[in-house]
Amino acid sequence: MALFVITVLALLVAVMAQLQQVSGEAVSLQIQSQRALFAAESGAQVAVREVLEGSSCGAVSSPKPFTVSGLAGCQAVIDCQSVSAELSGKSPAEEIFTLTSTGQCGVGIDRAERVVEVKVR
Image (tube, rainbow, N blue to C red):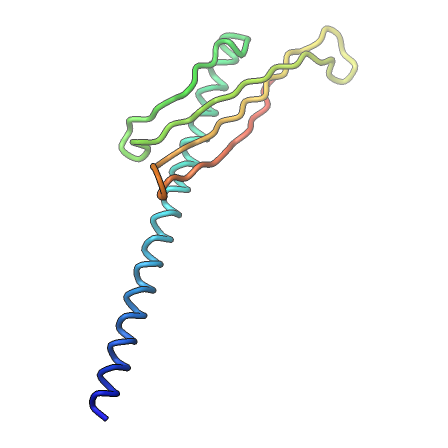
């Protein structure tokens, strides 16, 4: 009887340890995902400033690595597309920029990636 109780308790401890490990990994991935979102948003904000100051997609630099403590090891890769269009039927045509910022954090199995898209005119 004692052997049975010891075996059941050992199995219970093993299952609890496995659940704890899986829970810790999920929290770690959630943090990486949040960091990637913040990197994507930060990259988009910098790209908006660059495209408005330079008035062209050529003014946008990419990738943008981050060195601040919260985003260390993260980067934002920016893609810029521009289109000329007459808005509300008004001439002359305005330049509309679509900025796609992809935030990337971590490496290997712990890598997270988030995308933010911004339109600017």
